[in-house]
Image (cartoon, rainbow over the protein chains, first blue to last red):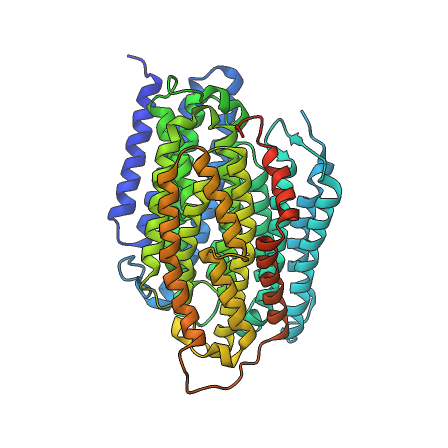
Length: 104
Length: 486
């Protein structure tokens, strides 16, 4: 049995939904961030699979996008962790349910 | 392949100006706080002004595609380039007194504003999904930091955390959309996607999820319902000049990208997305207007009002015509003037009174009559009353929707405009009718008074003598004609 494109698509979609569930269900801001990473990795699997099963001419585009996604994701995590750290110093919590000074 | 680097000179200047601000910040001794603030602000303003002038001088007749269609250097991009440089200058001028009062790092602050303008400019130019994504991130990262830069207020840390977490989720959703679009079509260039997206025949699950998720990611940046939840909290918690930056720059950039994407890639399948987008536009207007009613904080009120404004702008995007695009561009210009005028007044109130609730505007007509007048003008313009920008631009937007027999959408738009008048008038009533014990005159900083006057004049100019603005938006909208009908 050989793997088809659709198998990778399902894997990516499943991973993405798992990440989305984590985003919605997790209470710690750090865990939410990790769930977002999961979603981004689903994107990478998707792109690599599409590139591999495509004619050679457009293959490179998908792989280039993956490189950019990895870079941007790393920068995003760095920035987000710094912001969360600042929040922790100020409020003593990173629980997203308790971050509720502003409402309405 | 066109790799004429001279076309990118405005962007090079902008990037250089950002780094120059950081360098200047290092050169001025740490002890001279005030001088450091003024010098870095002046450098940033100079960089933005030079960018705008160079862009107008060299690119008025260009219609080039760089790097095989990755970037479009055309009249459409030029309009936004100049608009964004102007917004950047206005926000920096608005910030000088604010930064002196509340910030510790003027250099980083102004440099990040310049980088945000660069990201927004690239968004308006990009003609390809990855380029669009990178530009969005450049703009967003700058804003994430700017929102959390103020010291003292506990709300800023919370606002920036909410902004970056929700922003990261929207990024992931948009990227998944990009990957699906690439997988289904094998290309990421808008113009090459266009022919492949024609008619419903070729639409499969991959393509639909891709299209929807990409637009949803942009919808987050626009604070389009149902992706608007972050806006009020971020608006309230952010330093007020940065709230103005988010309300004008980031919204206008997302509009620029969405309009170009839907025109160049989506025109062939307009019948598929017109109805869903029209429904979202209606929901955005209704929820934005109704949620603004009970607000007591002026920044939250303006946040919900800007959500409603995005709904109005979508009314012009839905028809997918040149007339509609023209109206959208004109509304974005008028909206930028109006919002910057309103936020300048809010900055003065916040600096002088230390608070920014609607009740703090009580008796403003006696304490600072000019400010009260400018705020009234800005609110009337947001509500869409004549002689101010909002009336004319909304009129154009609604006409363009009627052309495509979307009368029901226009009815909702007019009804929500009337509702919005109610909460705008509440602020005006505070300023003119409510009496206060403290009737002392408010000293208005010269710089902020000047800025408020300029923005107020712009609001009236767009509303009464729109010809120069219409000429500019016409030339910009015409760029889209190969793809969309009149």
